[in-house]
Amino acid sequence: MIIVMQAEAAQSDLEHVVARVEGLGLRPHVIVGTERTVVAVVGDERNAQMSGLETLPGVASVLPILAPYKVASLEVQSEPTVVQAGPLVVGGGRVGVIAGPCSVESREQIVQTARAVKEAGALGLRGGAFKPRTSPYSFQGLKEQGLELLAEAREATGLAIVTEVVSPEDVPLVARYADVLQVGARNMQNYRLLEAVGRTRVPVLLKRGPAATVEELLLAAEYILDAGNRQVMLCERGIRTFETHTRFTLPLATVPWLHARTHLPVVVDPSHGTGHANLVESMAAASVAAGADGLIVEVHPDPKCAASDGGQTLDIPAFRRMMDVCRRVAAAVGRTLG
Ligand code: PEP
Ligand code: MN
Image (tube, rainbow, N blue to C red; front, side):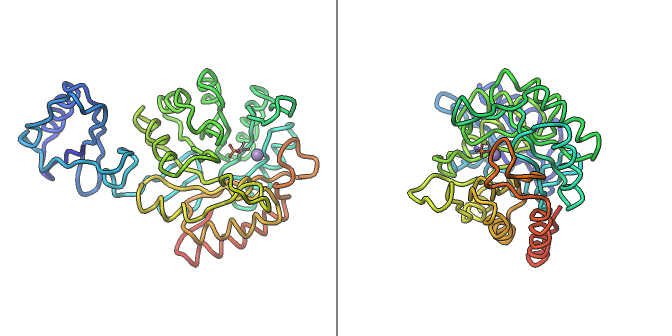
């Protein structure tokens, strides 16, 4: 349910509405827009006696929220959410680029990559310290040492650090280092993890599960929003289909579909989405043309020696070329890249 406040409602009217909603055992999310303030009411409405809310002072109207996701819905907030983490801006006409290796491997590797991607125009540095791997025998990441190396790379370049957190217990540790917490595809429906990142105020990049619908992605985002963290980016990273020519199938119709339903920015990952370095530039450009608010791309100084995902990783000259093409596409669709 959405409680729309009158334009001239006083702060005390809003506080009264919030208290009344809490008294019903529901959670109020106050969204202050440029034209109106609304209170999105979420929770189990079955036993709540909600009649009479429309008669409270300062209330203009009370409307149902039709979408199954609530705080993520455009019905509740019509203005796009812009996520900001240090220099990285995602949304609102800015296409933020996050680039870096799949895994943090060494000081030299991460600092060299950070300098190069910054020079090419990226504003975020990705790098996994905690790696969720399909096989328990694959490289699992440098863990806390990897986080320390990411912090050194930030020190050297000023880039915003984007790194994955794989379990709720690790959230406080990873949040001490990260500017953006990545929730990986395998964890999209790890609800305790979503709640834990939702309790921080660190922006979150939520990747779509390879077998999840976009509606499930929005409902997963809703867990983070409902826990109080509004800085959420959705990430299309490809889904599993019967196709084998690419590692996953990258459905770019997700981007305009999401923009028609949510105010949250949408980032595309053409690296995992294709699994092949030679397809990344085209799909990055197509993502920008489709309206993506950000890109997350795997880049390594020497991809064939990468500890993980080398086959889909761009080397530095290829990343520069990708940035040149994407910058021109962004300009053609009225956006700025970087
Ligand atoms: C990654 O970003 O390296 C990663 C593991 O991605 P995903 O969760 O999309 O598979
Ligand atoms: Mn990877």
